[in-house]
Length: 171
Image (cartoon, rainbow, N blue to C red; front, side, top):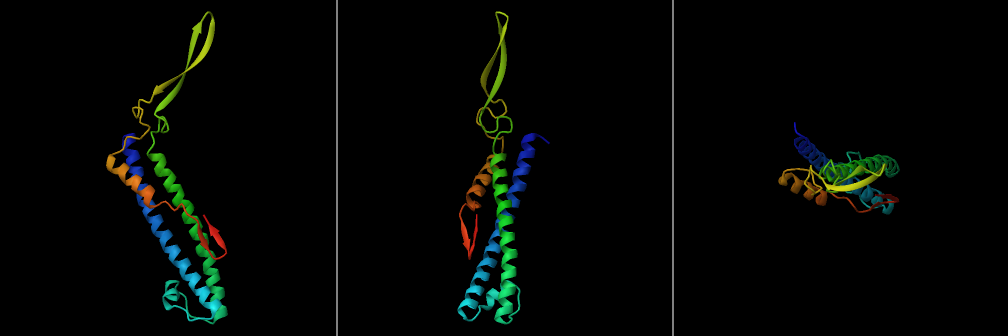
């Protein structure tokens, strides 16, 4: 398989992983929102929403027992959420990297060191040449449809915002 074909295959695989990651993040956000509502209801001594209880697949217990159980679930979900965000950001970085030419690393040019001899001296001279792999564009040779999908994914799946959950701040 050619390098361009391998890059396209990697990009498509990464796009699918990114979609799954975004879905997992969404589910975890929903779970954490349910946890927040349950804890608020317990704090305010108001009725619990059965949807939140069902969402977390827990039984209705005494308020004290329920609070301990929900706090334990919250710790697990926050850890999973943080881990999923890290994976998600790594996938976004990989997609960005896959768009770049692997020869010039997205610069479009390559610096070459040449040594000139003159009067018995050797002088290093650095020349800048256009990258022959990408033709100076700095972009990998990918099908335009794949590039469009990558650009769309980078916009749609970018979680570049701070989410505040109870006393935790997750980036």
